[in-house]
Length: 151
Image 1 (cartoon, rainbow, N blue to C red):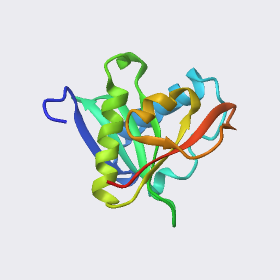
Image 2: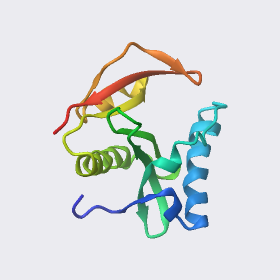
Image 3: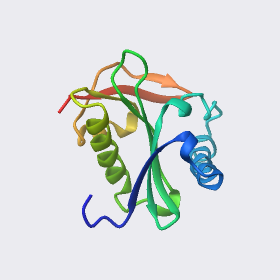
Image 4: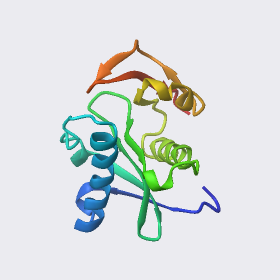
């Protein structure tokens, strides 16, 4: 994003210095486990095969997401989170636009899948995602599967 008030960083898990990895995982746990009051295995084994996209202001982590492609399925964007201290600045949209662009580059010609919290359906629809499943409950939170057509 040109002129963006952040820097984009994309890397594999084993490329993170320990403190940067700690900050990213702490943000995810703070939001998904503590804030959303959802006891589930945040560290689910998928991070090892994923790329991790972060939005940074200097060294401060603003937002992050992970990108991966499970065997034989479309690439996925997941663990989309914005730091509570930086919400209300349209960083969620910026994060998703960066993640979509990264997927379109790395996984060209393929649709992109997400498992979205149901209350965010309109947000993701605005980014070109369409609902592909009935609502289901995952870790106590209503979700829907969505997919964005290949560009």
